[in-house]
Image 1: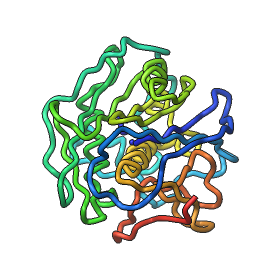
Image 2: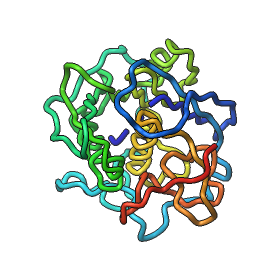
Image 3: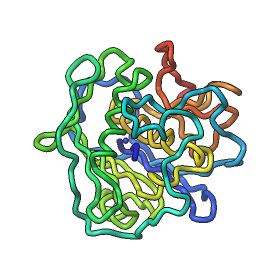
Image 4: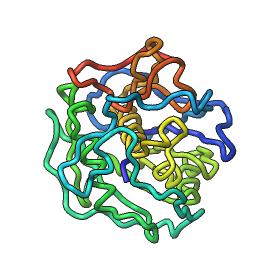
Length: 272
């Protein structure tokens, strides 16, 4: 259930296969919604994928207000089935989450919609709730003091978060020249395409806390939308920045899915 803009993250079917990546990232700060579609791509391998796990006592998943959200209340939780059924492709049509959210953050709110491909055993409302929680968390992008978000059910949007089958992700991303290979996410134009495999399975580092990985997907990709570029690990034992390509390996950093820490400090590293 939890889920980015113009980043492509590649996982191999039998582990992780390292491939090249291209990027239109220039870094900088957000001054408003993008005026024209862009695409970014990232790819790489988890080096030593079993070596890093969320550390005990470090909360990586945002709090949830309802009793039904207990799966996301602590590190190590997961609400996914052990063997999820992941269809290879779908109809390419989507159901949008109804209703909307209040504005979170300060400044002109970016309007977003949440869609789930028809035929999937996922509730658009549940996915939307998780996306709302991520974007509204005090450790998220609103902590910068000038970013704001509001979910809408339709009409004019700045971006759309879409969870879809691998085949549908391949088709939409391929229209922008990106090869997602049935395995990965991409963000192109106003579409944040979330591969169902990644939504349900995460990566080896986050396999025991899939909900945390969903937060990383959203924070990383929305970070690109806000004009933040990729950064590296700031040092051994330090939290991995949300804008770090953690799928390529932790490089001594410890897992972290938030752009800011509990004290409101921006978690970043050297530009890459």
